[in-house]
Length: 86
Image (cartoon, rainbow, N blue to C red; front, side, top):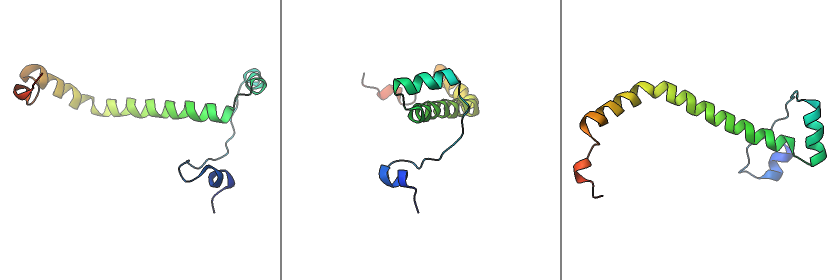
């Protein structure tokens, strides 16, 4: 059985899970006073942090291939470049 928030959000929304966070009290108080939805802000921020870390790891894992490919392109030009129309 899905939780109520997931049922309300619809099938397109990922399931949410309650977690405990330790935040600076002054910032949290200011956010509440300003009506900032802390959960949404942290969800969006954490998604961006995860995306950047995944990209960083992908680049680190594929750096040797990318460097080799760039050396080939520098030495031989782009594949099919002779048929390029612009």
